Length: 272
Image (cartoon, rainbow, N blue to C red):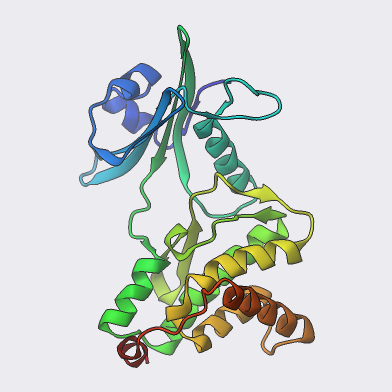
């Protein structure tokens, strides 16, 4: 596969001597996530910063792996490098106009018997995961309803766009959804951790899976906010018979798996 380098970031990488596979492979950067080792291979994530020409710095995540793949029917022995699968997912999301990670560099090399791959993505500057954002609301008090609505609306619109393109995320947890406040009170939302995404022909199937994943991990949002998000996702003002069925189905699944638990009293009080 041909090397990919984002034209927007290529001058910056070249300025710092990092516009090629070998330079990035040798780059000394602290581990952001400890290497994952299995079946004789490894995969790890580092973070590094580069100084910008006009001042300031930009963070990047550098993913490197060696002999670390996912088996498939086409590649039953060595498998497909997991970063190749992730890079393809990122590019597919971008082609569909779904805000996600920004790819900076991707390449693979064969070094003797070793199969290597590098994936670099730009850090989401100014973004905060919904998990951390809601935790902040619980600890320090929730913002005004209008602001809270904007966050829920942005995440709901993001998920609806994914499903309209036939994309089911499969791990749509609050820690994988990032948001930031823009000018005039608007909110931008992005989704990460795309490796397990898959195509599903029916939006209802995707909705049942991804809404369940998000809402079962978001019980501390409070029922009212969760219902607001649900309506934003469906693009409705009042619950329709279909919406009521879908909501009850998700709640039944949560109860069945002992996931539906109320947050502590003091958190409910703080969240208002």
